[in-house]
Length: 277
Image (cartoon, rainbow, N blue to C red; front, side):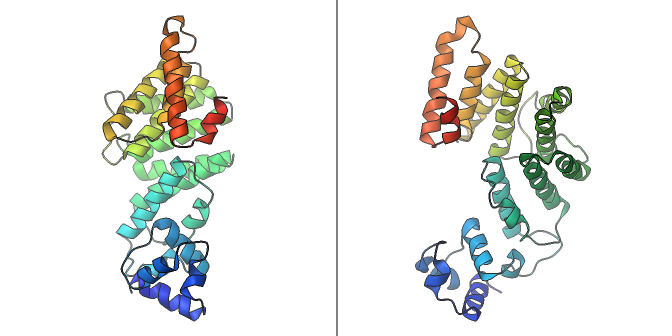
């Protein structure tokens, strides 16, 4: 069944007008176009519509099999992107709406997201347990980006608990895997730049500024190569921090701080702007 038809039928069964359904979600015109199959909604609009109509994502996508569909893959990708960009408010709710039967590839992504959310909520033991499920699925293959992201979140987990030696163990495994280059077949630029940004921050905290500098440069160069601004504000900020104590690089330090401030203002990153006050 077409997505628009499902939404139309459910809206009518709940005695909602298009305007009532659209309230706080989108415009009435958007609802009309979705129901007429003229446009596909964005992931955010779709999930809000499903919540309002008491539908699961499985209800609005037909012909599910044990393999994931392109729609489900795009939703998982969007949820992972939200996670890496620290937009985590609705991720758990959206995850609960996904189809119950998934491929191993999807389960890697789902467990990575769940484990990372548990880490963000300081639920350390459950986070480590969930992240180990990812490694079982990837078989700890370092050429799989979900192995590297799992190592990253396990390392950050141990950092939060004060186990710096364990944290560094996982960070060095990522470092070894990316020593030659950042070419990971199933990785996208946001994942790779996020890894660089997070490792740069971690090595600052571990008081290993030369390694922080190295990952800042890798991340900045990759962002330039891919023509994206993902995490550039923090990459320039950590690059500045990594050379702050070098008396011979005072001018470069100021330039990097200025670049960090410029990009933070450009993307309205209030979190970093507050740190730079």
